[in-house]
Every structure is written in structure tokens, then in C-alpha cells.
Amino acid sequence: MDALLEFALVRAATLEEVIGARARHPDSRLLGGGTDLVVNIRRGILAPPVLIDINRVAELRAIRADARSLEIGAAVNIAEVAAHQEVMRHYPVVAQAAEFIAGPTHRNMGTVGGNLCLDTRCLFYNQSEWWRAANHHCLKTTGEVCHVAPKSRGVCFATFSGDLAPALLALNAEVDLAGPAGRRTIALENLYIGYARQDRPITENEGDGKIISRCGRVSSSPRCGRATPSACARPTTRSAYAARSNIR
Image (cartoon, rainbow, N blue to C red):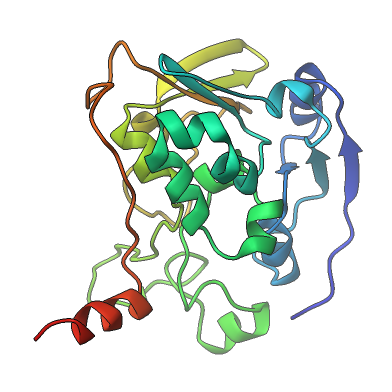
């Protein structure tokens, strides 16, 4: 893995400071846990000149959960969601989804906003610069073919790996977006374009410098009723072998 490129770091204390920094530095990236961002910078996938640290913004660090609604700030880390007693009580599918994410170290660092905004991933893309160049790049960078499916006719098969989005989508979640033009709330499902593109990240459906400030779900309009039990299961290679071993 290559050495980390040089960048400037802005430490924001309020949401307004985050929005202002984004407006001044349109090519900047938000830094929460950095579990995906910093790795991609080291791999040469991203080269932002400025990182904006959002971990000191109190508004982005709050969790509010009861029987009526769930609100999670974008900078709340995954481990906090998984261990939050009211989230576990009223929205177990969200707590369980958070618990399934990566390992303990990643959950202690990774954030809710970061997990919702993960870029699509691929074995041929998430590699070092020299590795990608040696393989003539791919459709997700500057190449002309998807190495996963060479006959895909221009369709990128990189996949989204966020675990929180499916659980929150099942609860009809909404996200609050904040930007220079103000704030607005949209359905979480409208945050995604639904497919991978070389020139458009999967979660930049809104653009114009907007950032996710909060993810919430109002129980007055859920897809499943308040009393409906919920749970999360994540099929993996290990669990698939375990299930197969139990088949007689």
C-alpha cells in the first residue's frame, strides 16, 4: 500500500462550520471514522486536498430512540448504535445490523453516515494504483470494461456493502441533508441511484455540497407496524457452510 498523500485537515465544531468548509473546499471529503476513506486515499483511489473532521460536532453525535421514532446523528459510531439499549429494544433490526458490520475495531471507528455513504466496492477496484494500472483499470475508474463481467456492455458490477441501509430502508427511514442552501429531509431510498457508475458515486444523488446530518425514522408512516418484530440476518460464507452442515 502506498504512502498517505498530503492533505489539509479542518476540525469543525458545529454543523455550520462543516457546511462552510465544504463550500470553501468543494473537493474535500468528510472524515468520520476513516475506515474506508483513509484506506482509499492510501490506495490512490481518492486524493482529496482537504479532509473535514466532523467528530467534534455535537449535533452529529446524538442518538434518540423511543417507541415513536429513531434519530441517529451521522457521526455516531457503529458500536454505539449496536449497544444502545433503546435501539436494541425498539429497533432490534438496526442494532443487529450494526453488530454485523466488520469487526470490533471498525465498529468503534466507523460512523453511521459513513456506512450509509459507502462507495461501491470491487476486487478489481479497491486495490493499489499500480495494481489497477497493471490490470488496465476497469469501468469504475478510467477503463472501458468491467473485469467482473467483461460482457456487461458498460455496466459496472461493483457492489454496495453498507449493512445499515437495508435495515433502515425496511423501517422507511429518512435522512436529513444539510448544505449551503439549507436543510431538507428525503427518504433514504432516494439517496441512492440504484446502480454503480464510473462518474457518479452511488450516494451522490443530491449533490451541491449537501451532507447527511441525521438518519431518522418516524413510526407514523412505517412499512411495517410498530408492533411487528424485526431482526437482521447476514448470510456469509461461514454461516452458509454452517447451515449446509445442519442439512440432513
